[in-house]
Amino acid sequence: MTTGPWLRLLARNRFAVSPGRLPMALAVGCLSVINSTAGLLQRARYGRVIGEAVIDPPPLFIVGHWRTGTTLKPASGRATPAAAGTPSTRPATRPVEGPRRAGRAPEGPPVR
Image (cartoon, rainbow, N blue to C red; front, side):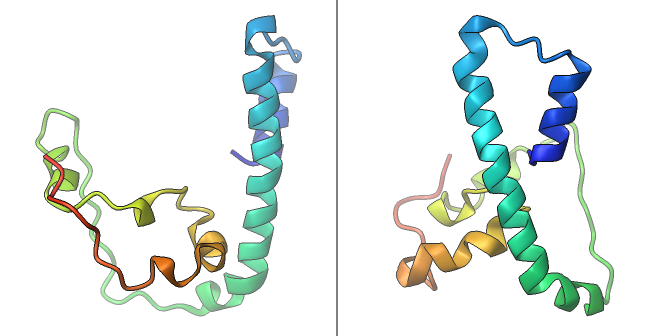
């Protein structure tokens, strides 16, 4: 979540946060600033390239309910730490990961 939606959510609820949830609210607030910064860096670095990209043929999205069997799709691959992160910040954080993940196949058996 970026900072704008986080602040709007807090404002809509009149900044009412349960005392037990204050640490979580503060963590989300700090992470939202990091997410917003990463998004700005990503747009600055890749925005023009993405805007000029031509996707042909158009992508096919498979969307299913949890009972339709689509949950088995992730299990057919291997679990990998490279899949961690949010889609919106993945390109911006790739340079931080360095070469340790580049081109490496995941280790271990497939996830079951």
